[in-house]
Image (tube, rainbow, N blue to C red; front, side, top):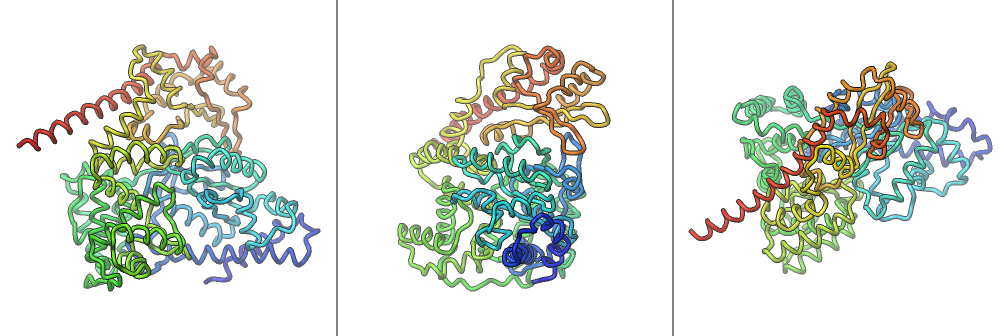
Length: 602
């Protein structure tokens, strides 16, 4: 452990952090300073060398494998995310499963600690799910090394000086029954300590756009050049660098151009690299990636990082099929409980329930050893076991559901999925997509179509009515930003359920951006309206942002912009596309069911 990192960082900020705390006794000063030093050292050691999906058996230097993703807003790509945070101070980043959010948060932590820029505090928001603690309690336990705070006043003074960067990771992982409370706590915390910098991350669809102070960005998919650069980086220290060229060549084939959207995700690209020796061709479906990974783990799991493709000992004595059954049920049970990390006791308890039900004869400790060491499908993070990524758990759970009989599936898709909707706070889009790939008929029949048709009206005809309904259905907000004395449409944000995100997958508001920007150029009345919409104006030191929603449509000056025939038509087309996709799902269900019946009769 590099003990100098935490000490150097806190010594840099010692005076500004403690300048207002003259009443702090030496004993309490030691608690605060020592707590922060220990915290920074611990997390720096944890993040500076990591295991990845490709390098699972050894910790490698973080920057040997870290690939800097880009983020975007209003079609503008941004590569220097640290500079963005330094300038704007309140940044919200949304990314799909495997897009690189976790690696990005590690990078922000390391770069701030190494460069003595700000004191980084990482808060995994899921820690608040099974606790009565507030976010402030959680942060207070960090800076006092889990000791009781001697004074809330002193803590307030330490945090109010503006020397911290708070990395709030995984907003989508907050349970829905905690969402309102935790969201209010986060907003109150940010307001109280607004001199600091804040980064919050989430999967899409969890409502992260609702945070008033934050500017919203999405992680950009990897483009062709970045895909090649990512592959070369992973093989930079590998003894057989020629594999990188073979992988790049395979991806570059004209016949594979339709599959590249899978590889724009760093996680899925890592999976393809990992499985390349066994499966050198690109699969057509995302779910097949996960199967290839599991099969590779079960057969030649060390083939990437070690020459010769040797296998670890299987201590449990179980066959692949038995380990697969345990994994599938473990994933299914824990996913619907909202968990993908476990301490030893909870993991042992869950596995015991499974092996008892199926009369699997094996020692629990040996099963955990095989899942962790032999297969590396569960990894240890401190004293906690986790899946390499939540999407792995989602794939195993979806595979389990696919294996059930018709009545069991109907029960899962109606009862269990409804509970999942109530329990979770977004972030299930990837799970739903995998379910649709693996089990399309039953997923559409019992879950997606009933749910989306209960939410979305299919009978609206007029273009103006369609536009109003899109605003209402998606809780749509148009974000206008003033920069260099001119307003432009920066963002279109919406707070919609995961199932709506599945239906809307790939849709864009690009035409609306272009049309509205053309209309508002030189519109003095509209600019005056935005300037005076005080309660909605955000000031982050660079831009002013005003959010326009359905409640503004009654204002004449807004109506004159939004009801322009081009804008109405663009929104009408959004409605039509959503409706057409729902109808296509219905037609697809009919075709799939009839095809199945026809083949069964042969």
